[in-house]
Structure formats: structure tokens, C-alpha cells
Length: 113
Ligand code: 5GP
Ligand code: ZN
Image (cartoon, rainbow, N blue to C red; front, side, top):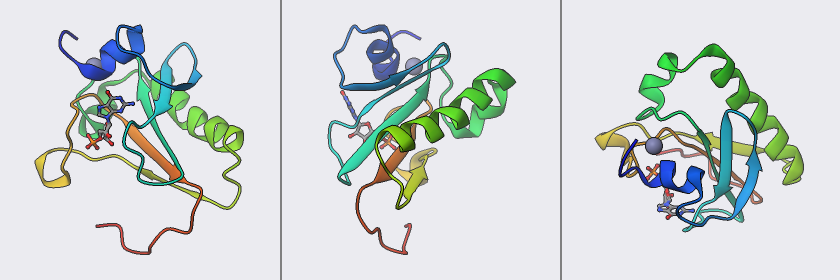
């Protein structure tokens, strides 16, 4: 997808701190971390947000969930972590390429909004 920031990061046209990559997924550190560990996990295939995730092939969907587990283990998030995906205007989604925020490394608040 032209002019998509995360497509450019996946392609290496824009540098990022990569933490994980496989055939279907790419993960890198958020440039403005909201927790000691703040990673963005994205499918290499462009879809706008989690509201369109069902349009991804099942193998890509599965790979995303498997990647969460691998990243959490690699980042030693054994005390827990939070996965957030902002979808659309009300959720303040700012980059229109599906991404899962993986947040951890501290005790988080019970509030999620
Ligand atoms: P959203 O607001 O769409 O849920 O999340 C977008 C995230 O992308 C934000 O947390 C923001 O800090 C991050 N971000 C925006 N631009 C860049 C960038 O160029 N590099 C990296 N690593 N993260 C970015
Ligand atoms: Zn994209």
C-alpha cells in the first residue's frame, strides 16, 4: 500500500527497531513507548485495522496470535502483558495499517479507556 507508514517500515524503507519477523508478521518497538515494553505487531499484508482482520487469510491471523506468544516470551513478560488495537476515530487510531500494541513491563491500571 503506497504512503502507508507501516508498509514502509515492513519493507525497510523507514528504519525501525525490529524485534520479530516471520513470513506473515513484523514487530518493532513503538517510537513513543507507553510502557517499559511497547511493541507494535503488524501483518505484512496491508489491512486498515482490526475491523478488517477477517479479510486476512486464516494463516496470517494464526501467525499474529503465535507471534504475540513468541514476543511475550522473548521480552520476558512472564508477569503479564496487554494487547490493544485501536480501531477508527473514536479509538484514536493514527496509523491505518492493522497493528497490535503489546504493552508490558509494569503493573498497568485496571482502566482501559
Ligand atoms: P495508533 O495510535 O494508531 O493506535 O498507534 C500508532 C502507533 O504508532 C503510536 O503508538 C505511535 O507512537 C507509533 N508510531 C508512529 N509513527 C511511528 C514510527 O515512525 N515508528 C515507530 N516505531 N512507531 C511509530
Ligand atoms: Zn500498510
